[in-house]
Image 1: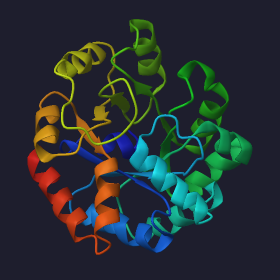
Image 2: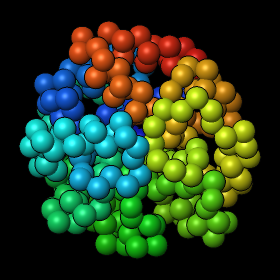
Image 3: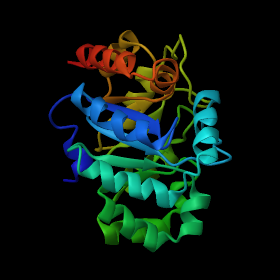
Image 4: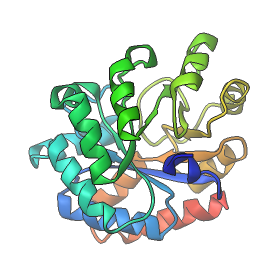
Length: 255
């Protein structure tokens, strides 16, 4: 069992996404330990990219600022290596395929393992076209986490269930990331449809922004993923106290 899948064995998993280098590297290095201290089980470290097609305006802006700060995949690896000394929860990179491919698949996977990263999520890489990086990741002992959406066919669900390691990322709705007041009423049906085929833990992301939403989704999933709301709180409160309070509320809603 990998470190990522093991995180789901103890309780409903709370997974937090942040963009590396937003608003700056110093904040990333303070924020991740704070998230762990307040109840996060897995941290997603976003590698900023100029064309983040799966992300809404909050993460797009965070990526833009991080790129302006000079954050590259190499910088993200360096940040992960520093965080490895500060935290014990698994780290997952979430990034787009172009920078990773340009970096070099084998080199990237090897450096991820050295930096303490346990796996990665690549939203724009279909599972049927991931053979090369899957081989490199397997050689390095890393998980690849694939995504499914409510529009996924039964064939795609079977493929992702065969390929995904650590957990499967279930997108709550068709569209991009971002806090929303209303999640789809038939979300539980989607999760249950995937569970009939998959044996991996199922975590739901995209749109979750309140403890009430997290509590409702945790009734039928194995974990929840929150990103945009965290970045919004970081932007409005550089002390990070509001983020800490928000994460504690999410944790309580899941337990």
